[in-house]
Length: 377
Image 1 (cartoon, one colour):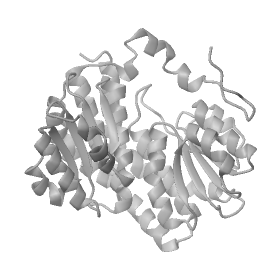
Image 2 (cartoon, one colour):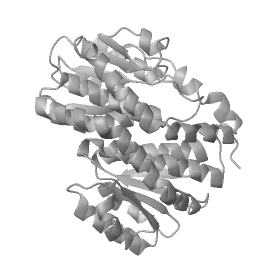
Image 3 (tube, helix red, strand yellow):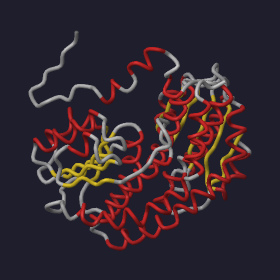
Image 4 (tube, one colour):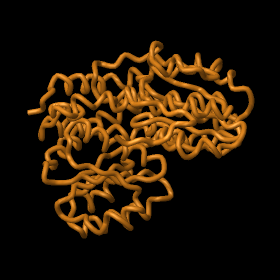
């Protein structure tokens, strides 16, 4: 049994409301974003999308959408990496966009402070008006109200945060035609979420049945769907504490290939893009290794992958901009079903140290200053 079945019930309710929540959120976000974008003093020379966890995955997905609309380079950077290793060499005129749904993550706040110390533009995005991030000085603070269904791992909140990144990119866009395409795509997102979740039910239950504590799990993706792989791993870790890892698809062939074998459960994200030939090659090699293989692919390719995989999640046809959002959905359903089957606890908090230290290590961590030196002890 899972130690928090009530929490899993809330997560299932959150997933069920996802399509409707996003249908309501898109026009609301679009109506408020112009004022946020207008606070940026000039067109940025470079953009850094920073965050941690689900928020970072939103940046990884959105970075590719921003790239198509902006006349400057765009990067998604972990908040700690930005504050320690990137900010000092960021070009003058750069813009830093920091996302934290809770607004309490110390590393995100630290990233904003380090950016402002350099004189860079800053926009903060959070769902909590009373949070430290909302109170942190910035050129603009964008409040995107969202009521989580208790202290449970994020599902709808991840999609909402990513959509907020998309809408901000549209408001700052240099390429009007690209902006209009993305906004049109977002208008379809709620319905496509409903369609995707309905199509995932059978596959997610079969997938959960294949999971067990003795079988490590490897998630493979690249480009925008690397965010989907990372997000799915996080949900498995947060709900089940199974050994779960993510890797970029090509890098797997250079690294994890050396240890993967029949005991592994592998989930490979295969979007309909120029990676198709390589995706099929990797799937064939995985089949030869004897892994239990699950493929997430466009429904038109499901039959071809069916000859290679044990399970296929058939995804609806969708615009490229929506691929990383929709491809994150199977992992939500599968992780909840797996937790009900193999047990675990939310965030591992059934174990004492995890319960005592889980929130403090993220929310109460010391925020470095420009003169802070590392200390141990």
